[in-house]
Image (cartoon, rainbow, N blue to C red; front, top):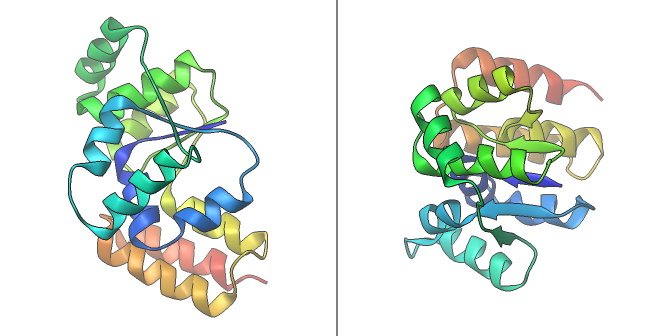
Length: 165
């Protein structure tokens, strides 16, 4: 099972990697109510795609049972509601991994010992599993560079990983 926060889900949808991921992932994909709100409030392509995947039950919206925990996580790690709910949901559901591209959420995962990945991590894994070809993986990395807030070092490290056959 994987839990996503808004940033990673939106990046995967914008770069058209979401369906590739959903088609290859065997576990459940969960998001919190706040993440759904953040992802689906616009009428953009990515918002409509995410909404369709929720309607099709490929992404499951799950309620947070412990709202006090969300408030504490948000306060302790300087997170917005969506990221705090995603972390609380990952803890609540004992998720195998959390998908996040938010620096503060990543730091929270490290401290709380929650395994995590990013949109770039998902791209690299798709290339390793041969779900995506070399040229397309580099194009998707460039799209992530445009849409995401990645440092040059992160992009360069990902490019090196994508160059390996």
